[in-house]
Structure formats: C-alpha cells, structure tokens
Length: 179
Image 1 (tube, helix red, strand yellow):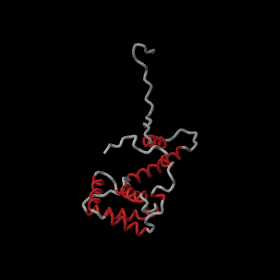
Image 2: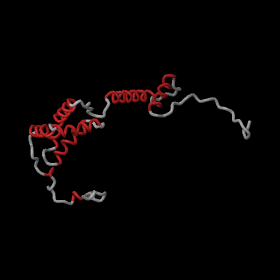
Image 3: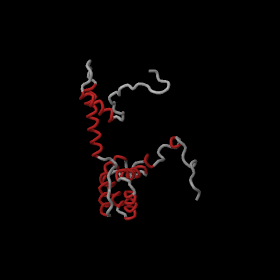
Image 4: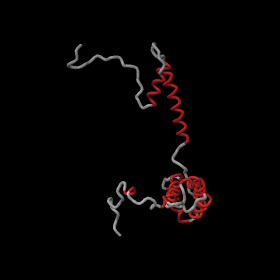
C-alpha cells in the first residue's frame, strides 16, 4: 500500500465542485431522537478496547471534553444524527466515559481550564479597571504616594518595568568628559 504524500489530499474548494447532497451530513440523519442517539453511544462506548484507548489518551495528558466533542462530531459527519442531537447527548457521553474511566483507575481531567487561575485573572482585571479609572481622573496636581504606588503596580502587572525614582544625575567621567 503506497504511503500518502502531501499531494494526496483534496485541493481547497474541491468539495464545492461536487454534486450537492453527496455527503452523509447532507442527508437526513439515521437517528432523529436524542434517546436513540444516547443509547447508540452508550452501547458503542461500552467496549473494553475503546475504553482502553480512551484511558491511554487520558493518561497521555488529553482531557475528556475534546474526546467527547470529537466522538459526537464523528456521528454528525457520518450522518448518524444532527449536531443538535449530538450536543444534547454530549453530557451523557461525558458522564459515561468519566465514570467508566475512573472505575478503571484513571484520573480524568474534564478540561484544561484552571478555575483558580481564571478567578485570579478576573480579579486582576477588575483591579486594573478600577485603578486605571482612578488614575485617569484629570488632576492638575502631582500624584500623591498612593497614586504612585498604583501606577507602579499597574505597570508591573502589564509587564512594564516599574518606574523607579530618577537617580541623581551623575557627572560624566573619563577622558573626554567636560567638566
């Protein structure tokens, strides 16, 4: 069997030149009821070989959410069910896989999102908005110590080096220095 090369793929736009209705997802779905779709996936995924493969992917660092999404999207692409039915049964697939994999002793992560980090970032954004609004006030006088500290904290959070007090100007030294 020859190895597929980089030129053995469809060219961009080739799918637009075919006869409409030839793709499985362009036909009426094989299953219209969400209950039938859920039962299809539960029966299909209740297979030791499939669960072993999913366990290997999870242990390799994958999370469960993209696996579930890929699973029901494949059903849509094959014309088994509509996207809506896939979205409705996704939580059922997720719960089944999570429970099955954890029963096998695999530690399952749902997503890559860290809720603690997300909350900290949201809190920092609120702080920056409040601090910037306070500093944007039109004042004719020089900023007080508190405003200077806020400016330094904002600059640090935005990745800018904090402004330090201007060092006293040093007199040039050396051979060519005027003095």
